[in-house]
Length: 191
Image (cartoon, rainbow, N blue to C red; front, side, top):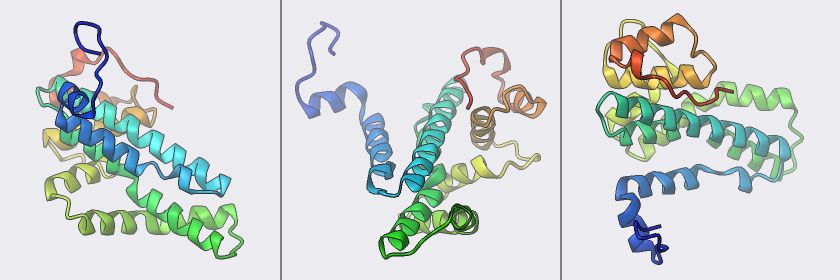
């Protein structure tokens, strides 16, 4: 809606209203939502879980970045991309199932555990993502205690909160390093 209360009637006006970076982030989120393309209900449920987790990390990373004085757009994008490897692995497993294979739950877990990281890295390289963005995605999964790069601290803290570690001392240490420990009042429900 416009400030006057009238509806936005065109796509161009909608993009102008929310801004190009947010419109691109929304398009990215929609393109990564592959659950509708997975007929196998087990794979579909896993895809929905991974996508929901990535969206929560994206929103929390953006919130923390904004509290730190950054726009948070790159952090949001990195959060959305954080489970690309798992989503690609699920798509490959679905293709295997479509070809007639009977895949057990244990085999699904093993395939994701063994291939998600490699597939995710390959996709990020194939998409020619900037190193900075790839580094932010990596900081979600691998937190180095000696890292003091604010952007990496933001991504690590966001992942910790979404993983239900918002009460851990390490999470609070990261917030203190970012200088936002006192500003972290509104935390989303971690599942």
